[in-house]
Length: 206
Image (cartoon, rainbow, N blue to C red; front, side, top):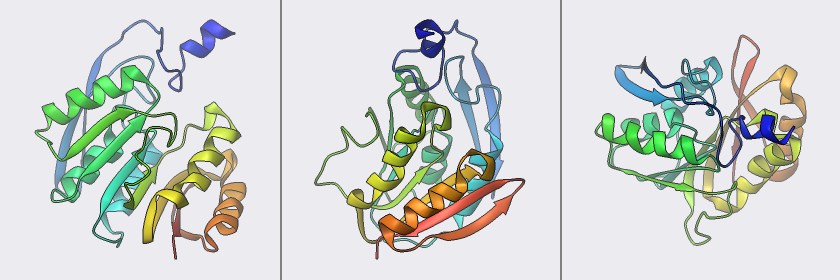
């Protein structure tokens, strides 16, 4: 079981045999290439849920401050955010060392410099004094409810006033309970988009 867990994308140091690919993804006139590998989430393509979130993210209004991608993997959400808002700094955090190294390569590959990429178990290494206007996440469902809930509820302490949290989650993988948690934590939760069972939830730190 321990060895199987170390193959997973939510492991700190995945032991899965390398299987590298390059995938292309484009949304709204922005085209990015991503190095991927075994041991990271959705190695063969940018997963559908992340695509739905990227599209929703492009249209969101939030305070002009820093942006944070929690559970960044090889970087699709955070790197698209950095392209959409080149004058803002974007932090990409994950526990997965292999994913973080790929994210760094992908930032360089796509000539993106307005990013900081570092290891953090949820918000553990995110500077307390640094607050964000936007936090985005495609939470690691297979890591368990405790991790997912920690990402969602913990976002409030890291947002500026009127800062926005955007989450993608499937209904069958816990959207109703995620919506309930966001309402309890933030006092609000809006369904921004529904697409093939994927929900984009928005909570505002009002």
